[in-house]
Image: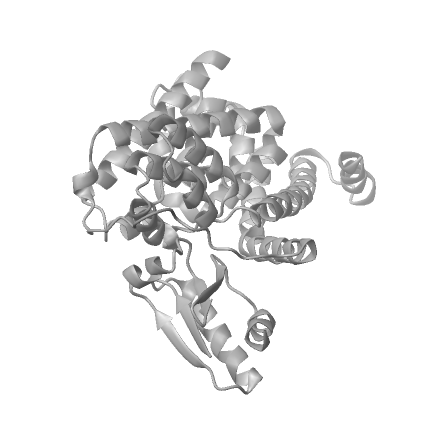
Length: 77
Length: 315
């Protein structure tokens, strides 16, 4: 599984990255986490409100900071 | 009913009279009223907005004719969330979808200006009529401002070269149940409330002090009808104050009670919420200073014109 956090470097994006890391640690699964701050790459996902969250190439959330539990739920599918 | 309870508390339980009684009464009454309204209105707006995200707005603006696009973008601005850190992706994303630059600016003006905190505070402090007028003028500035910027042909001042995408745009689909939406809206409401409740408290506190102790003619003398520069000064003061909108509104209520004209107050609020310095700094990375200056200039002029117009109509 691969999770990408889309964001240009604002506080919300950093917070979401931390949340994802915690959720992944809690899940105990092997997950690849990548922070995407290249604006062109973000746009390839059609996302215009950051932070965005992408799991295995699918956009699952845009424009908000999720909680650890919400991310866990997404990881466990 | 709430008013009577507070009156009873300050008169019969605390036995406060005169200036101090006035100030304490005002402080308790206003703080609770504003907090209540903030929570209610932010929740309603956040719930509505779970149906409209910026991606959705972009998909709907794509391929619309210019003026119609301006109107639609300004209307979308009322209900969609916008944080200035999203300004760049939003701008580039809109260009990528071949949405005209003027339409993009209509959205960029409307979204922060008609934000839920400003609307909630206005509604609580000045009633629905003033709120409706504020939103109406806000939409007008967004539509007209965007339209003018679009007509100036400033596309060359976009510093980044974005390839327009091929074919139709697909919306990002995120499905939510009603319960999810309510929970999301509630989390968001609490989040915003935590950020601003102190500002409201301080704002009302200072307001209460002015309400109780500063004579009306003092403010009327400096910001009232006799000062032709009042609107201008209000707008210049409003620009760097973006983050403190919540604390300033309660003050504005007192100032208008004490003789500041409503047009001046509205101009001030529009300047605080629509022209934000942090947003300008962020946009500077992708837009030429000329374009940003035009953006600020047109919106600033619009806001000043509205202030004077409003003052003239009401006096």
